[in-house]
Image (cartoon, rainbow, N blue to C red; front, side, top):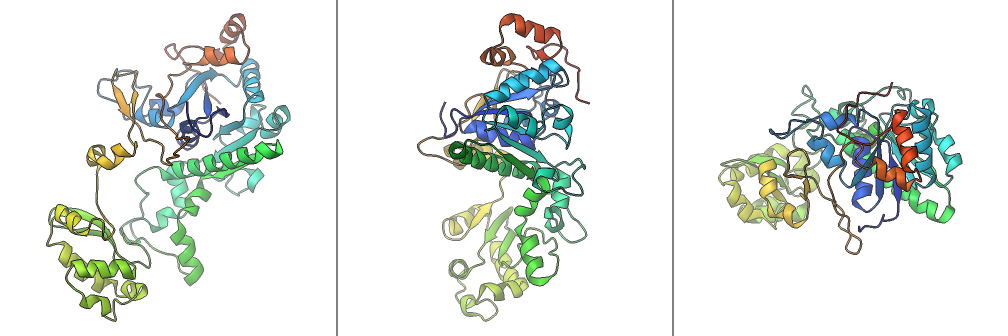
Length: 415
């Protein structure tokens, strides 16, 4: 095992995407992430896509990607015995991450205050749609949330789409993954501080706050002008040219909004006159006269194929072909960067691709070491590490507080 977080133990009570995404980042960089699942398992296990020959439908690709490098233990936290096991795990943990609705952990008798008394150095991280009262009680704190809710309330949807009459969510679940990123960062910062102080703390992450933080145009434009920015398709407020442009055989993304980039583009287009044209001689003037800018650029781009444009502009002016999934899987960049590592898929007997660690640490790199766990795959192993002998483990299973195998009938749910 490698990574800067080797030796850090994380108790992971998260489900769906935002929380598991957070803890997968910690696991990639070496943390021992113990995923505590209810008897029915993480709800996202049964969400596709599934391979055509996967008859089980309990190990979907979304789950595989967000839970690699983790171990799974099944505990029913509604039982006193299951709660006691969790407390034992917390005693030796460095961090706990959960994304339950507000009040669930309190009802289970596992609030931050309770766990902090047991382990004062525990870093406790939560991810909720509108945050936790400990970080500032929102009037919407009781509201449940999904990615689309966070994108809508966080402002991102207000600036996404072809026009003001057609607001759309960003195609990926960044209303989940971006909060997961912020939660992972907050957890690591709190762990760093705890090394010197010996004290843990609560890390409160709101999905809507995270979306707003990366929707900088919403804040910047309104603060400067008092007007709410509107959807502009693939353009960006204040920048031109900065858009997708149609070539002979497809589209490219092109950005040359600053003077030096614009000058290079004009040279390649063999239009040096445009550099000194008063309509185009500054960033702001090009934005004001963007219709004229695009008339010139689109006319030139439309005379070339995507391959020709890549040859002409690549390495000189910011551009990119618009790659779909098939093209990404075949592109050498992502292979060289280790962004599509292979892991085993126990339901097909083949391998699956997941996304790899983004930050490349040269001395203590993160890595995807193994696939996501089957439900309860490591229950016995983790209980043994916590000091439970075989008889005690059997008693927990008999009481319905724990499960060893993901293959048995599992029907209990949290209420």
